[in-house]
Length: 285
Image (cartoon, rainbow, N blue to C red; front, top):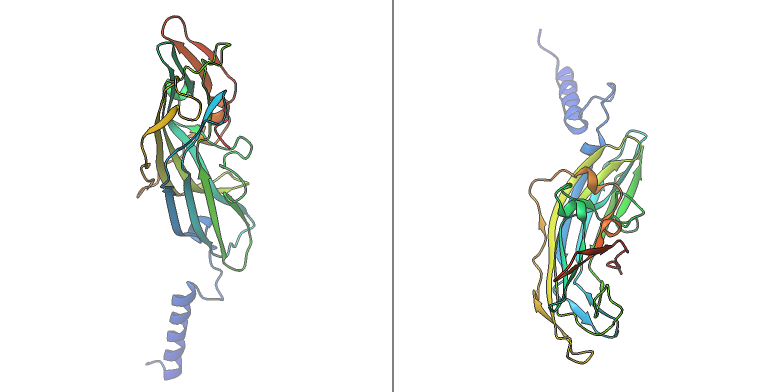
């Protein structure tokens, strides 16, 4: 027996409802997971084009300020069906660090991360030291608490640069006489855009960015203050790379200690035994 016209029309209406809504209203649908609900609309990442600036205003230390690394993401979260809270934001880790300050033929000082240097870990957290595992908790993160009925849109952004102080004189001596002749620095980082479930700890890596900061400053200690230091390279930094495939986050990248707390200041004389101090660096402004 052929179906009537009205029965046929009813059948097609049901198909349209299934196509548009993914289920028939009278049947309970499985709520989508948060992983399925979050959409990264846009990611941008760059390092400012200006060169590293040098500050010789102090007769005790040389200061320099590198250009800023910047990362930003526009994110859309579809309605969240479950009662759950997620934080979306940036996590950063240091993968490699060389930071050497040479004092003529006397020796050199260096900031070092012993476990990273010795290969015991592959990365170390670059959190602000308070809001683990996040790089920060102002513009760097956004929290979404379900259930929600509407789409949630937001932007999370971060920036990073180096602004340290390097003594003109040998750091283990009493004299402040200028003996600094060179500063070399080469650091690499991985930065992840992440969604983290605050209750379960479930982590969803959304994007992965790799970037590097290098510099070489030549210093003539015999020149008067204000004319000693000169940036030799690079005048422009390599631009960051947003990876096609995400990388997993090493466990050390999300827990204490962070890089600033873990690093030690080494003095390596040309003759004699190395000496070290655990005094904290002042890299962040």
